[in-house]
Image (cartoon, rainbow, N blue to C red):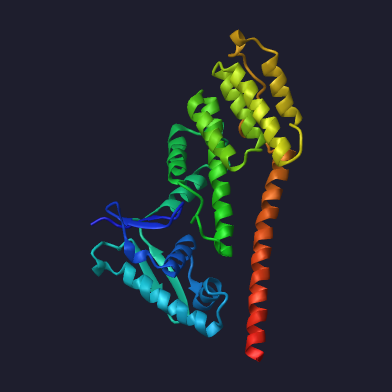
Length: 311
């Protein structure tokens, strides 16, 4: 019998033979299972897990809730449920807990992590076909951000990390497509990047180059205009000198000379511009603001609880 297929990108789901298993429908069982899977490389203190997942409860209650969730998770993984869960085993001791995984288990985040690790330090233009294929597979698995609809602090942190890895993979595929003249695929990957960060200036530059080298000079110039609008609306800045130089180079050529060699400094793997750094800092600021708001809410809840206890 086949093992479990676990999806953490987009909506959480556990499948067997392409059928979603309803035994994992309990919200806290899903959260506990997802947390242990994401940090599957090490054991976890039961006290720390209880405090993290039931942070608004007392220590005694959080431990009780963890015991219940572990029991439900163990039952869900029980092989007697009618499927082979040999790829996942829950190890529970008096003071710690860990998920043991096996090669027969399939986990979408693990596939992306493995693909990402294979290309660390390798520019997109230097990828071979095998590595490019592994990145393409990882991109297709990213059917949404990590555990969409969940807003726990630990989840927001991991979601940001995986989104960054996803964007870096897309960047490398963009560089690969540019150097291998795969213009249609390159434009698709570039569009995926801009869906997350429409003011990512170097992505706009690569799309300009892709369209220009594919013979679409008009499309390249329109891409520049989209870049200008995005930078102005999102960051309140103008394009940097590399983008302006590329625009002038494209504008100053004739349609018949679209195949001419372009400035090699304007590649997909160029260093991020100041506008991109500013964009990432603003995204980080927004994430910290959300966490700060959550902390304020928790403080108010504790203060209210203390007042109730005193009365």
